[in-house]
Amino acid sequence: MKQISLFFYLSLIVSALFAQVPQTLTLNKPDLSRGFPVMKALSLRSSASVFDEKKLSLQDLSDLLWAANGINRPDNGKRTAPSAMNSQDVDIYVCMPEGSYLYDAVKHALLLVSAGDHRALVAGRQENMAKAPVFLVLVSDISRFRGDDDSLKMIWAAVDVGTVSQNIALFCSGTGLETRPRASMDQEKLRQVLKGISKNPMLIYLFNC
Image (cartoon, rainbow, N blue to C red):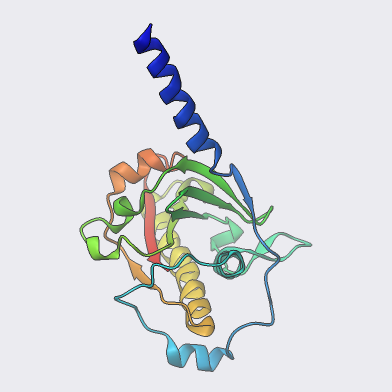
């Protein structure tokens, strides 16, 4: 009886912890007036090696994701970043201490994929990066492209992810945030944690912010 009671008690604790992580995080409307002029932002663009562990504000996170690949033309659903044949193949996963989320550009919201801190998986071998408050994992789902040539699709994926990557870099340099593009990560474990990532060929890339 004691074992059953203890298990029930622990289950309640675990349930309570998971309940504290919001299933959906509604983002703020993007602030289109902030930041430096584009040429000034380009002059300041650099890849950081040290990151402040301070949590990003909701406005910073909202603006960052909209700049990366949000909808800037609501009448036709097109994005801030172009994609091959408007396939909109790039998904953005946001890994933070409380959990990992998928960015829903249509709702401009974050949808919980997996509770818990998975930043070490994204840091991979570069353990010194693991304390960055936010990681953006960019995933190109090549199944959204038309045609059957996977090698060509991977080229399109690289271009599309690179464009989103540049949006992130410009936003950060233009607003005083630190960022760094990286490729080192534990892809196999990330595929398990970020449940929307299939085992099919995909291009996976990431940013520290």
